[in-house]
Length: 321
Image (cartoon, rainbow, N blue to C red; front, side, top):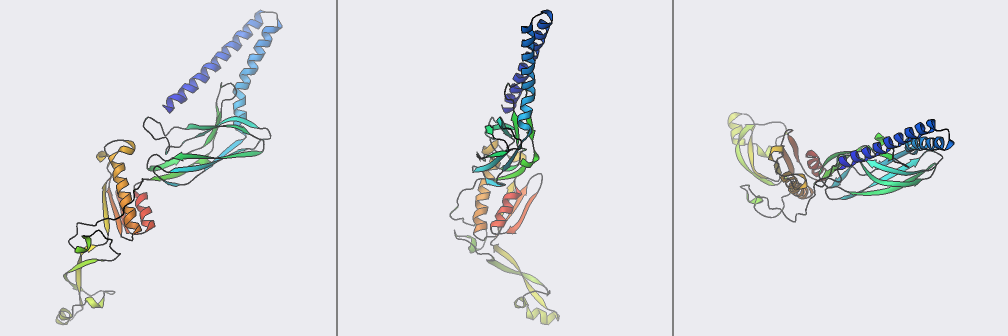
């Protein structure tokens, strides 16, 4: 819809321009065939109108600059504020200038075209050698990694015959929108044979159970308590006991991120629900000092080694952006 609107606006401007050019030509033809001053005056007036309509928009945006500043991380559904600074480097005031930006993270509702540059507002007046600053609140509608900008200014004032735009790469920056999470009060860790995992309580880091599974040669750094002295005496060589862990405090998320497994579109897709649930559980485990790791099956393999804490939670969120 946004693309159709832009094409419609461009077509209307072209029609007005061609209509004015046609009227100007008719006025000159009439002035040549008549020995009167009034037709020449009308032709000159139409010519001046045509020149003003084509040149003035470029003059309005020529000495202006715009900078947009904002956060680089947000959560799905969160309202973030962008600070916009429009500066007039000329001595004369500028007016009726539109702020145009490309913000694919916003306006991602069904039926919208989030990847198209769109007009965010009109700046009525900017005094000479000064600036106008304002805040623009926007809602992050969908999880993802987005490249915002470039931000620019546009004007078709006063007649709408032509539109002048200027864009600068200063307004380009990246925004990561993380999935929305919900609070988890407790998480029962089940599925392990040890009784450690059979309750609704948390496991401290390093806890777990182990079972003897064999012997091997002693290596530098092995715990002396694990040396099996009868076998070492019989073989005349230090031998240590090996243990196989039966339960550990590591929570392992395995996600199917393949495009073919995704059903639905937008925020209602099955993949989005999976990531919201996984993000909520990962925040609970990481912030409660439970070692957490992630494996994802997709066109590009996703693998996050075990860890805990806020940094581990950020690594997990960034891995599926």
